[in-house]
Length: 269
Image 1 (cartoon, helix red, strand yellow):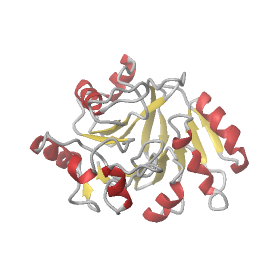
Image 2 (cartoon, rainbow, N blue to C red; image 1 turned 30 degrees about the vertical axis):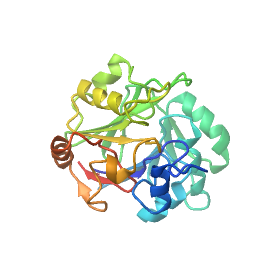
Image 3 (cartoon, one colour; image 1 turned 90 degrees about the vertical axis):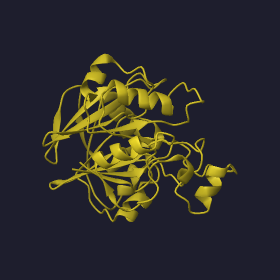
Image 4 (cartoon, helix red, strand yellow; image 1 turned 180 degrees about the vertical axis):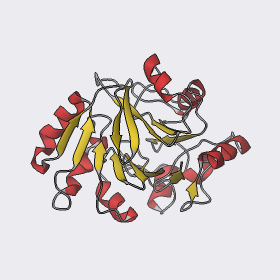
């Protein structure tokens, strides 16, 4: 199973419009701080799945040379997680889409003209795609009443994606995430910033500890962090694939930096 972080930015992306902070300047100058909106690609030898489809999906698909996907799984109904789905218009018809009912109701009211093939799923009820098992679990993302994270399992390996969430995830969801080989965690801001709808870096690391994750990568990252090369562990092998063991070793070597993901980052599980 291979995971590609297509976009690691928050709702505004980095650079943020009309911002001249050091991180946005790094992004404007072509640095690793440039972050498109949320999307994750999951691949096995049987196909490709998109987890969320942010507004920058067109460029992400072109960058990764993707012309076909087998399905899309949406975590929730905020525009920065679904609006790019329109980029399938005239490229691929009737894409299968999965999500909880409230999420699909909201998104497909807007994207009905694409006529995707709808599949409603429930929290903690597994479903099979591309030879892997997907399970959605409930997270806390005010003001949405329902929002999902997910676990993906294949050949004894587990990837957990929190989606957008606060730290107060239900106990049943914590149990679903336990022992993941890779945790991809919402971590929108550094530890000194407290948030209402998302986790900061400190809270994301606490979630990794609570779930006994073997490795963790932050995503949904804002411009409030320092420029990527100053803040992240992962900045020297941009186009290579990592393994969970490599991520774990890098983190243990340098705990002064955060495990910030970056656009195009690939992890082989």
